[in-house]
Amino acid sequence: MAYHIKKTSVLGSAVPTEGAEYYAGDNNWTNEYDKRKTYATESAANVDKQKTVTRTIGGKTYTYVPSWFKNSTVVKE
Image (tube, rainbow, N blue to C red; front, side, top):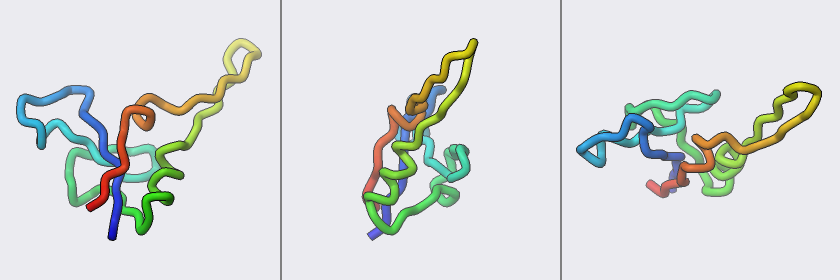
């Protein structure tokens, strides 16, 4: 069984199936279902979904989960 990561497009859509974006890997998203990254297990997909970003701004370091992952879901195919 395969899994993938999906989120609602920031542009939205009147047609629900057209408003989806799929994680393609390497911090890239696509609206083309065939170009999505697939995972063998749900836990492998969750590892990518929970990636954090660390930034240093004005001498302070911040670590956070980007909103595109925070608002996404792991889907079983």
